Image (tube, rainbow, N blue to C red; front, top):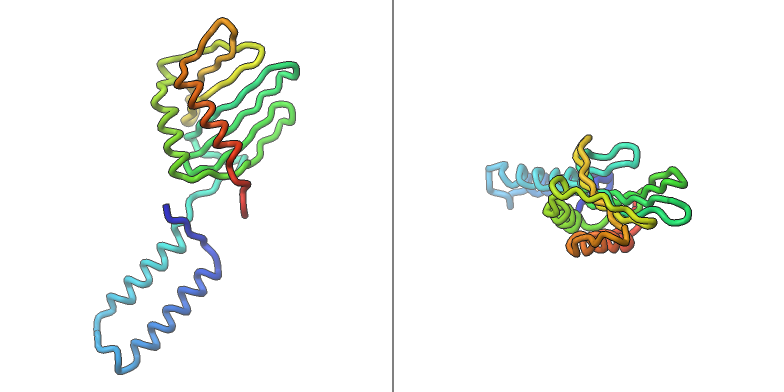
Length: 180
């Protein structure tokens, strides 16, 4: 996916290119009477300026999210990761009571992971089998959450769920740090 940056430098470049084109169009070399090329140029320029995807902050997240992580053990801490469809990743710690942006994966990869979570049909296959240490995958849409929790020694989770959890954790671990 094309990634663009909305900056004053980009706008300056577009205005400079327009000035060059405009000066060229005044010369006798330019015989075309139509303004089509200039409109096309402006539309393409506006596309590059305006195509940056939405960025969210920890206190203002979209309705659709994939939550995953683990908890329990001696401290009882729960570490929750939140994946958004634009690729942003947030980390929430229950002991520190904080949520921070971890970084961002490619939007295409994020959408693929979200589709895989949707395929699990968590709303139909409700599992709540935590152990001393437990793991979870949850899909959230607005106020609706569908969560699968496992870790009990007496319960074996489906290998698809476990594999997807591992993929999500790897994506979170490997996500490049956020840049501003």
